[in-house]
Length: 332
Ligand SMILES: Nc1ncnc2c1ncn2[C@@H]1O[C@H](COP(=O)(O)OP(=O)(O)O)[C@@H](O)[C@H]1O
Ligand SMILES: [Mg+2]
Image 1 (cartoon, rainbow, N blue to C red):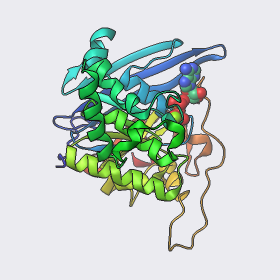
Image 2 (cartoon, helix red, strand yellow):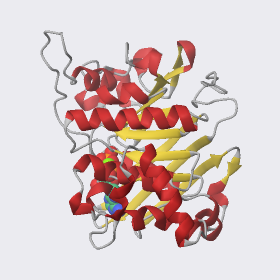
Image 3 (cartoon, rainbow, N blue to C red):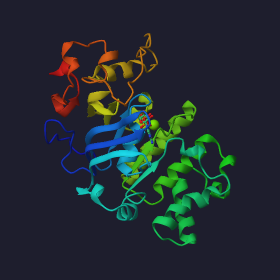
């Protein structure tokens, strides 16, 4: 069931009782060239059984946002701050040990970018799906396999595939297997990082259908990271647009897809081919800026067709009708 969106204050997308709330989340990396501001002060909230689509070009910080939520941090972290709340509890303040025991893979799991290509080649698929249960839930091998058998059927993999090796499966079946790995511990929230890229269109549609069924029948929440805007609209209840490490737009799907507000979102949407529409595709000239010393002011200004003098200053998150949020001076 859909929760009613309720913006609790002017600048932060929110819900009355969210499953996940992220507040002022920052993740910066240290490199020889300088500090990379990959996730720069992001706030949002996601309700139970809701799906959030996180959209944006490559290099905008989508994967880093996922890692920041799950605290999967590389060694070169320079700053990691803000709040990550689950069911109102600030789990970011927990020790790594407690976080691993009570959050990662148990309450929140993730299908990493290109995970289907990094299945272990020498272990049977079933062993890999059962493993999180043995490691994180302390289950014995037999019960773990029984549960794995249940879960693969949910995602449309025949149970006898558990005995196979990754190279014996098609791309679509491998992707279903890694989704099964993320679901096997029965988490509340699954983060999927580009789960349909590098799959053919038909397989993409099948995977999205699997996710839709799971969301509906098992009341899961999803964060779906993608640059495939067309397929995202089938699953998403709300949409977050990321640009250069920041959130630049937030809205429900009903609000966003028919009428994106931020000039970047509009360009992104216009770059999607549509059936039954004679329209030249709109490509966004240029590339997202480097996140080492990103431009001051609006980070999209240099590529923006609507740029004006005010864009030299950083726009605040501005609330427009219905709790929609957009980080753009045009809506002041
Ligand atoms: N461990 C890291 N060290 C340094 N820079 C990183 C690291 N991980 C990602 N980045 C940089 O952070 C930025 C955002 O990357 P990423 O989160 O992967 O974006 P996206 O998933 O949207 O493509 C990119 O500039 C990327 O090069
Ligand atoms: Mg990525």
